[in-house]
Image 1 (cartoon, rainbow, N blue to C red):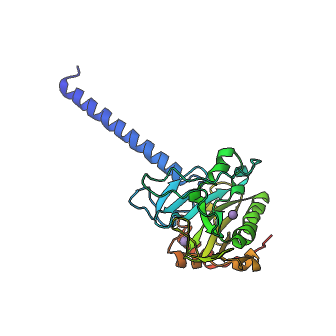
Image 2: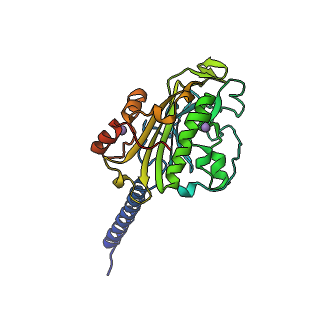
Image 3: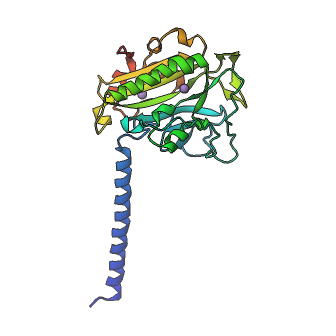
Length: 287
Ligand code: MN
Ligand code: MN
């Protein structure tokens, strides 16, 4: 016979089972997320960006195509991170649909498509258009102004572009890449001279930087990063004389970019490995 008291006990036990099942399911999905290969931010969140709108100068935007730390004072990204492997590269033509990112929190200034025109600076993609050509929506996403920095044409169209193309050469050779890029400082020299801002207070960086972790195609990516993993990082002047040197000339250590920006890159990689790969300057092939 089940009396009232054992009924209560059964309900209690059932509730416990339900609560633990929910907890377990949540933990599972969390651990799956953390271990998820090919995530655009698998190697870490360099500035601890969050989706809290009060954190307006280090605001995390996660898109299927790339992740951003957005700076609402500078009207541009602090950094953009993305994973690049052969499935990202298809035959979608360049969509060229530069436009405001209307997904920014309400009340924030949205940089417009025409805002850099006549300034002598290009709308410089961080996540490159050619890195997202599998589908039309993927390519369109790269044309959001939240993915742009004002880049001197001779930086963007020559030296920076050559490094972007080299990244795709690495992918074609059987590698997958984790990439972070952004700007540092303020004041660059475009085709109409020196400027500290363009348009509605969009900060012109003094330098553009990029960090590329190169892994042969495979799984469990974090666990495959060792002290001998190739990491290419560059710091290029945002000027018209940038193109007087090839991109390889601008290689620096990750530590250099970390000390300039105050960010911690590759924070998901064990510290001992970070210490080794972040202190070296790449001297591998450049084409
Ligand atoms: Mn570009
Ligand atoms: Mn680091």
